[in-house]
Image (cartoon, rainbow, N blue to C red; front, side, top):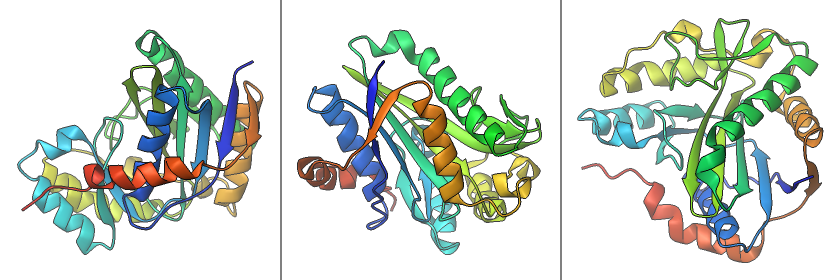
Length: 251
């Protein structure tokens, strides 16, 4: 059974540090300096933009809209379109060592989505895998509630020797995602339906990020060997070198 180290450390300040830490973990795993990692934490308030967003003429306006709503703009590690993280969400990063990572891209997507569905179902939520028409940052392996509301989004980055599968689980306050993404997606020229955005607590009242995180870890542990750990100091130090690559470059 593959072993993964569970990391729950959060680095919300500066705003791009959390994604820079994921970048540093991926780099260390790809070089064989670390084994597999599952990172699960409560993030800061950010809108994470993808490569396609940065190529859009409205990107500078989208960044300004992000900041006007009290969120920081950062650039994603994996692909996809703009996604929102805040204190009512969970950020996850699953970094897998693999000598031929491209061969198992779809397998990893299927695994992480299945892990999430099992975790949410254990909390009494009707969780399903699949894209909802009109959802933000659409993807085949999104997880939704009853086929109506997106609650988890995921992206993947493959490098030599490793892969990073990461995304966001919306536990509370879906309205905050809608509020910031309406002007952001308008600036980017993207169509979406804000009514497709949901949170686990909308259908499991009183649930919090700690309970959802526990359910995710238990689901993950049913498939893999995991043990809790902390990040090596050199990985955190290297993350600081990656910070600038995850900051938006706008005039």
